[in-house]
Amino acid sequence: MRIGEMVRRTGVSERLLRYYEQQGLLVPRRLPSGYRVYAEADVETVRRIRRLLAAGLNTATIAQILPCVRGDDQHLVPVCPDLVDQLRRERDRMTVAIDELRASRSILDTVIAAGPSSGD
Image (cartoon, rainbow, N blue to C red):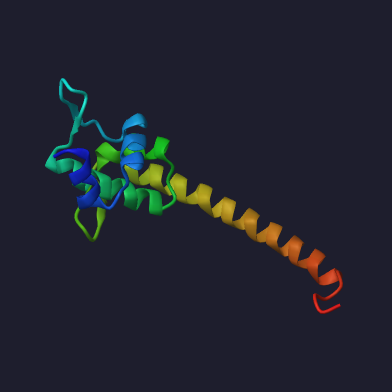
């Protein structure tokens, strides 16, 4: 399928599809004219990419783990032995970042509370 059909089927813009290609997440076939041709399986690949992005993973991490993830519309399933441990490390990294953001917010709340009220 050509890029317009891929956009329609996935809801992802042409620009994002090209970005995914640049990041090595998608590898469409190229016609001699330079047009991209996507396989049917690429539709599901884009859906997996979108779900992994929504889970907070960056494209570099997704490029590493994408071959090890299968799934349907409801669930992603790790199929490589070490992937679950890698995902746990990513989750731990996110937890640390969340804790740091909460601490920063608390400090900011203290500064705001010490200032004049917005009604003054």
